[in-house]
Amino acid sequence: MARIGTKISASVLSADFRKLNLEIYSIDDLVDEYHLDIMDGHFVPNISFGPDFVKAVRKLTKKPLDVHLMVEKPEKYVDSFVDAGADMITFHTEAANYFTCSDYIRKKGVKVGIAYNPITPAYIFGEEMDRVLLMSVKPGFAGQEFKKEVLKKIYEAKKWVKKKKYNIEIAVDGGINDKTAYQAAKNGADIIIAGSYVFKGYNHKTKIQNLRQALFLGHIMRKKI
Image (cartoon, rainbow, N blue to C red; front, side, top):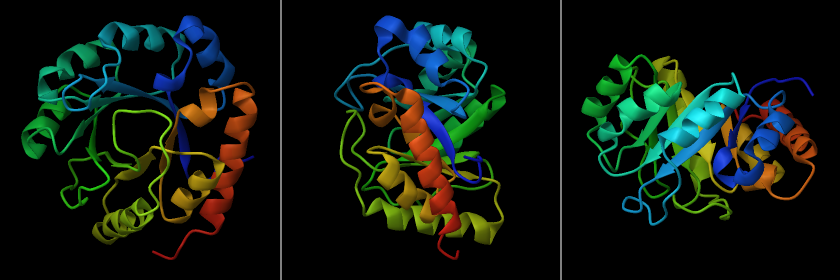
């Protein structure tokens, strides 16, 4: 399936860490990037992994790494994750000063993403952003069901970006499978982040191919924006 429109980012949090190299190698030629969720046990209730894990993933792939800081005071962690190999740092608007944090990340020479929880209106972003990440589940837990009300937010965010002629990608994270990927792409998503759907069970490649087909169809059926 041709890679038209929406890209696929594989969320490594759902991979089997005992065989991380095999998990990455099995899909590396099929995905566009990798998404790494950093949790501190405060901003979200769970704890995930740190810079050393990101370094390990960096050694296994040349694809871009988006480090998603689901932490309090994310600016404190930017340096260590950039040094670990991050190509993009995504932080939550609920956890940091928008302008201060984005400016600091930009000065580190990597791309800037800003994330919004499902209940947070996506209204603060401009040309200083490379990506807007719209959470379609409550952050902190893998395997949750996609919140359909976020589809409207995707559409409105994409409409705003096009109106302003910003070069900003709209990403969606949470509850992504072949059905919700189609809906997200149809409403304007540029990137879908999939974890449990890709890594749980077997046939990782088949699942990604299913996602690719769904995204292709969603792009064809995309709403007029």
